[in-house]
Every structure is written in structure tokens, then in C-alpha cells.
Image (tube, rainbow, N blue to C red; front, side, top):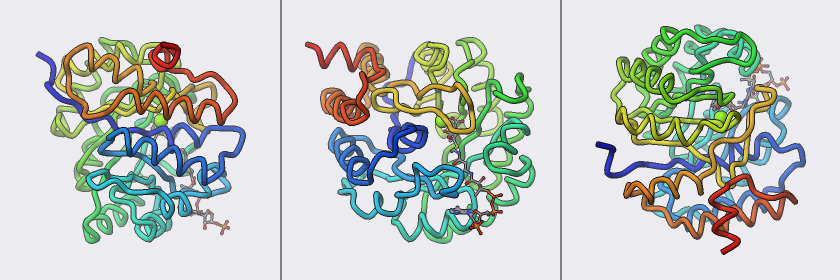
Length: 298
Ligand code: HMG
Ligand code: MG
């Protein structure tokens, strides 16, 4: 028995566009977010307040957050690696801040320039400030299924980071397959380990589709009770610190799956397909969503 309804968090404007080689203007990002808002997402990851030297594509996050048309009921999230990022996210009116750590020591160093333990210490004031300001707090756990630098990642390491994030008071914790290496049974095993440390209804699956396994992994996650998933319109994305990683699973594909399963999402697939066409045209390439391309051609 699968969940009757799921929450889809649209991460294309952040996870997708952060990895584009061509810089995308703030105006195009705003148009993309507005189209996604109209499609009915309750949560859109729209910004990232990180060092512009590390991720130049996210340097316009303040402008984007200022210019989007906010849909009542939709939460606009922003990545915040430290207090400097938090202050910027707060000023920009983010409804949710995302601290992002890793289950892999090697990836933690490459991505945020500190050890896992140091990252948790750095997140502590961010978590406190989020609570004090009434913002939602989410945590992302990268490399939960494998790491581009160290290879295998023990499930114990995932469980430890999930427990640390829980202790910081997170409302939601993302189990991320940064490089898309997971397969279905492994996914269930890791999700169940995470669920040993945090309530299952607060756990989300963040799957990159590098090896074409993301939809299977989502279905496998549904089977063990996960009901929150991240996806990117048109399959945009990657991670600048995970070489060779491709985009997140495409939102259109996930919505098509959920429709077929009779699982409610509250999202208008047609409007997502349109948003995918819009951003693909802008980037000058065919979108990576199979369902999106099929539906657009109909
Ligand atoms: P650092 O160099 O150790 O930081 O970087 P620092 O505190 O020593 O500061 C150095 C400089 O950065 C200073 O500027 C700071 O002001 C500036 P300077 O004096 O040299 O001119 N700085 C900032 N600027 C703007 N916003 C900030 C900020 N903080 C410091 N918040 C840091 C540490 C974390 C900042 C850096 O490593 C960084 O920005 N990393 C970002 C990495 C990133 O964004 N990766 C992609 C997102 S994660 C992801 O995609 C994975 C996910 O999708 C899940 C999955 O799939 O796995 C979430
Ligand atoms: Mg990601």
C-alpha cells in the first residue's frame, strides 16, 4: 500500500540551474519560478545563498527572490551553508532554509570546505536562527548512496548524519543520491536506516538520474513509506562538485508516474510541461524529461 498523496519539491531553479555553464539571467529564472508556482507546487527551491566564487550561477538569488510572484501557500526555499547565507535568505524572504551536509567526508570537504563534524557545528546557529525567525528548516544529506570521491558510503554514516540533523531540529531531511548510483533495493535499505533516526513522513528522496534509476528508486521509496520527493523540471541539473553527475529526476516523469499510480500531487502536469519547454528553449536544447517531451509532442 503506497501513500495516497505525495509532496513534490521542485528543485530545478536551484539544483538545475546551479550547474548550467551558460549563465541564466535573473529574469529567466523569475519566469521559470513563476510558471512553476502557477503549476501548483507547494515547495519550490528557488535560491542558494552560497559563495558566488564557488557557485557563480546562484549569485542572482537575492534578485530572483525579490522578483518572483509568490503564490499563497507555496514555500520558497533557499540553501544556506552558514550564517552569512542565512542572513541573506532571511532578508530575501525565504520561507524555508536548507542546511546541506554529506554522509561522505570527502564530499563534505569538496562541497562545503569542512568536515562533517565541522559542518554540523556550522549549521547549529543557522538552525537556531531559523527557529527564532519562524522559518522552516530542512537538511540535505548528500552522497547517501555513494560518493564521487570516496566511492562507497556506509549506511551507518547516513544514519549518523540524519540523527545529527534531527537533533538540530530539522522539519524535513533529504536523503540525496548526488551521483545517481542507487538501485531499488539499496534505496529501500538506506531509506529504512534513515527512518530509524527520523520520522518517515519527514524524509524525502532526492534522486539524480545519472544511471537512469531514479524512477525505480522513487517507486522503491514509496513502498517503504517515503512520501516527499525532489525533482527538476525538464530534468535540469547536477552538482558543480560532483563531476559527471547529471540532473535530478525530471518532474514531468515523476508526475506521470504518480498519476498512473493514482497518487495525488496537487500539481498540474500540463503547466509543468510548458515550464519545461520554456526553460529548454531558453537553454537551447531538448529537455531531458521523457514524459515532458512526449506530452509536448502530442
Ligand atoms: P569557505 O571558503 O570555507 O568560507 O567556503 P569562508 O567562511 O572561509 O569564507 C570565504 C569567502 O566566502 C568570504 O569572502 C566569505 O564572505 C564568502 P571573501 O572575504 O573571500 O571575499 N562566503 C559567502 N559568500 C556568500 N554567501 C555565503 C558565504 N559564505 C562565505 N553564504 C562555503 C565555505 C560553504 C561558503 C563554500 O564552500 C560554498 O559556498 N560552497 C557551496 C557549495 C554549493 O553550493 N554546492 C552546491 C549545492 S549542494 C548540492 O547541490 C547537493 C544537493 O542538491 C543534494 C545532492 O544532490 O546531494 C543539495
Ligand atoms: Mg542535488
